[in-house]
Image 1: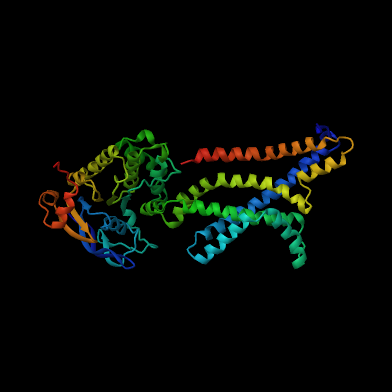
Image 2 (image 1 turned 90 degrees about the vertical axis):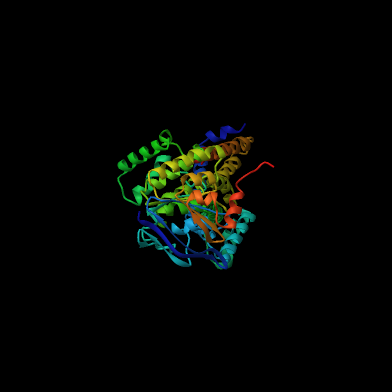
Length: 222
Length: 247
């Protein structure tokens, strides 16, 4: 079935290394996305309609545009047009953060606008200051709503990192391909064994995360 | 009896729309004043103005002789001396019942947790909900939630309690349990300003009735007189909408 190539030399370790790189890119992008996403999400609830329109457009563009085109644009396009050479990994993090920020911002916006006005008013009626209201009443509710959703975003990002091999990053899928190429003669069936293993690795990376999301969602449902 | 709340020439406008038009009245210590009137007459807005939730365009509100700052962004600590309970269940969904009750006393009044918890439990006991202290609001019925909301206002030791249609969103069979709590508070001599559509309850609990229409106080009086011999045609018509006669 082609699984035997995995036990040759350090093939399996290399595969894990590739997975590590995928996770590193997603983790970095997620952290950047959360920080920027909260800021942009707060802006999205602003009253200024120009700001709203601008951010709405940003969100729509990100949703419509395939991430691969964005990757090419940033990695190949920017280097050519502006003479700025970005490494493949930096380009990947930029593109994923650009995407993640938009998604995260929309989650923050949804969570913020979903808090009923009465929550602010009853806090105020109890004598809480604005800062105390956010600290004890509003933010805890937003975090509870957002964490499960943002965890789902993380798993989507991990899966989508398989695209970065297209700009030359040797992540788990690319390592898999290399192993298959190198063993073409000895194990012609390697494609099945290696790709099945890659699939399993993605699953093992994402499954616990999505279990955690489900657990938190259940725990905090209200 | 001494005057505790005094409203003088209160005006509230949203752009062109006048919601409250030159309202003046006062509430004595220990008095229960019930405000009734058709929907949109401004009765809820009136309570919200008293509690600083609405900016007012004109007039002054005094609590125990001190002027209440009604600018939304600055309060002078007077608003929390008036407790308010709203129509919709406004408990904090991420906190247990006990935490809902202790939050404000601990962070606003800087009281000790242990002491506040003891008081909260005693109050819960009184409204028959001590077994729910570790439940979350979503696990309670509407009537139970409103009883907790009343306790949450009481634990701040307000001098005046404002109740804004607290039974309007409840299923009929839960109205009673909430109103019983309010009746008990009235018997203890709490000062309360109540907005309600429950006429029978109003009659039972009120020391004085106010009839608000079109942002004005159209009629006021003692409940007996108010319900049996309304002086204005408008109030008579309004009261008639609550009685059913089989033809």
